[in-house]
Image (cartoon, rainbow, N blue to C red; front, top):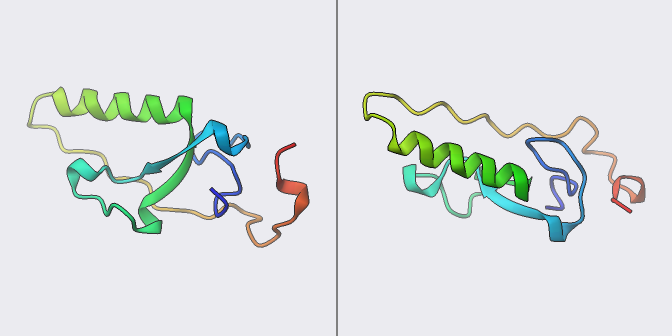
Length: 89
């Protein structure tokens, strides 16, 4: 969460840690690395639920469809300027 500056990587809202969750970019069920930092991202609960629901819907769909490519980790534009100003109040 600190790396992502307490910001949801999907909707880009800054929230307190109690409202955020850690998500696997590539789900463990399809071979994602469980503890690789590049496979982890900070997301809010609403976005995490929506992403999980979409993944489960896709798994129930016909087997002929290929899964979408996950988006690679992209650092926030001002990630080098960590200070008190970015912390949510």
